Image (cartoon, rainbow over the protein chains, first blue to last red):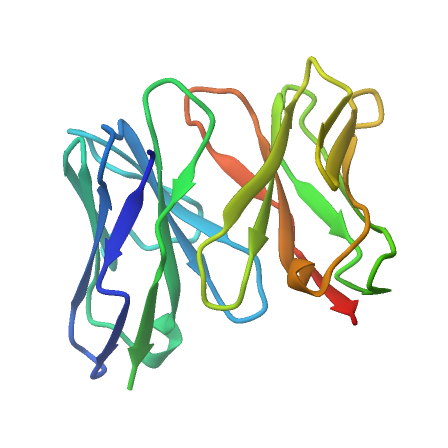
Length: 115
Length: 113
């Protein structure tokens, strides 16, 4: 149980385009989902917390107009990187929490490369 | 807010030896401390966790200790094997309604055959 999927697993896009990444909890309802960004050889940096049916809470320094997060259902959250630039190239990982619990289940990640 | 520091950044051990990774946290309200193993290009996998009401927890070759007074916790891997080579992250959960995990900077463990 507690499986989280992400789609796509990798994406290459041109600078200036937008990219949408999906995060799904496959066998449980995720009241809260998190989006992380991980640069090579670095730790996971939390970008935002996404609660179903409400606006995402962004961490300091993360541009909410650039990284659009939507959590429309208890099993799906999406991250849209708008007007992507090469510096946005990174490994994006989501995680999900089931109910009032502290255990996070991670998705497999999406590698974004912006040319 | 919470801050988690992790040491060392890299650790190289001979197969069969033990490996110890240490983390400190700043928020005394933190009450849950998971450890994750991440192989290159893959998702972090939870390998063991400990809660603030427990001082030590063991699962086969892996153990975690927690010192709440000193606000530090450690991961111990005994009888290391080459497949233990990976990046290990500690994390702390503050226990508030945000359910956020704050991660350490990671330790790259290399087990030499």
